Image (tube, rainbow, N blue to C red; front, side):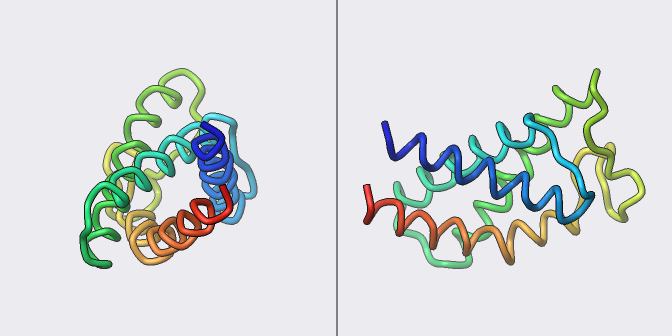
Length: 121
């Protein structure tokens, strides 16, 4: 249980940190999306013995899907983020540039942090 809590907090802070770097602001709802994404991604990665690139692909897709769902829920009333000005966006909720960030930067970071959390808990 402690491991899940640690993963949730790290994932939430990481996701919110990326939002702050991009837009100088974030929202608690992004912490929820990031925490949930971290837990799901590490669970999937640990459940299957897949190669590195496939793990990156899976992580990028999980994060993007959760970001889309979170956007549809939280942006409906609160308008927390808007990617409509970013090229290759879908309904202003997700976009290709962030998908590539999840693939190139976040997936390896999640895999690395997961190993550290497992060792220390």
